Structure formats: C-alpha cells, structure tokens
Image (cartoon, rainbow, N blue to C red):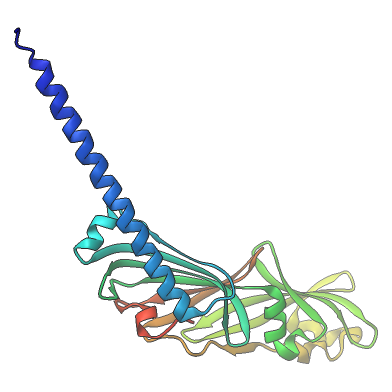
Length: 239
C-alpha cells in the first residue's frame, strides 16, 4: 500500500480542530455561567426594577475564571432605586477575581430629567429640567405673569455631591447672565430662585467617588471612579 504523508496531516488537523472546538465550547459555557452568577449577585445587591446584564470582555474569560481570574467585567442594571430616584447603572471593573476583588474601574448612573426636576426643589419651581446642545437647561413659565424663560446651568461635582449653578437666562427675547436679572423689572424675584443648588449623593460604597456629571438626551449622567479592592457589590451595594 503506498504511503500517503497527507493522511497524517489530515488527522492532525482534525484533532487540532476538535480540541479548538472543545476549548471554545468549554470557554463559552464557563463564561456564560460566570456572567449569570455575576448578574444574579448584582441583582441581589441592587434590587433593580428592570433587567441586569453582565459581560466578561476579555478573550477566553471563561477559561480564566476556572483559574480564579475573571478579567474585565461590565455590569448594567436598569431601574435601580437610590435616594428616591430611579436610575440606569453601568459598572466597568478591571481584572476582577473570583474572590470579589478588582483593579478598580468606573461607573455611570443615568437619571431621568423628571427626577432631576423633582430633586432640584425650589430651583425647579415652575421650571422643567432637560438638555440642549449638551448643556443642562431649565425651561418653563415663572412668576405671576407666567413669564416664559429658559435657564442654562453648569453642573459641577464633589466626591459626594452635585451642584447646579444657573448661569444665563433667555427671557423676553433677551439672553442675559443670571446676575443681571435684577436690572429687568419683569423678572423681579427670579434672580433669587436661581441660586446654586447642591444635592448630596449619599450612601456610596467604600472606594466609590463621584467624578463628573453631564447632560445628555437620555438624562443627567453621573460618572464615578471605583478604587481597587473589593468590588462595590462585595462591599455592600452601589450608589
């Protein structure tokens, strides 16, 4: 029988392909189960009104999980209730281990403008919060005459608080700085309502700090930094 060197090659190729398929299937299975466990833990901690989804973003994350290294993880949850507000939360953690530690990361919480309006209190009296060209605006009618105004505001943050500072007002066809409102008789009293307002962001887990906030079409987005160490879920919840 003539010797066929290609037969051995075909056998090796077939074995290699089978092993690759087995590794891939094992990785996907472990990855899927790990994602399910992470999502279940996040759901237990956050108790959201909507869905929770977890993604392992590293290649071969499932096989790494077998060795105690999960890698980079992204968790999103819809309808998380905190401080009498409902928000959509996304957390990204680097180098997560199966013991619940990470190399740190970041997170965002998106709050709807109906809730921003309510939390601003007297600053939002008669005005509705929204976004315009990437800026936070308050618009509506104020005063006994129902004067239509649009207020542009700056949003700044400390590690555990948000401050909304009205800077400019469009009123009676004119645009002016808030501090110039006293010169407009029809807008008397409006100036006092447009003082800066600070809202505390409390009950943040250890190692989590508010870093910035900006207005988007979908709501006010709060950004957070997460220090290395126990993950926010392991530390007892998130903001």
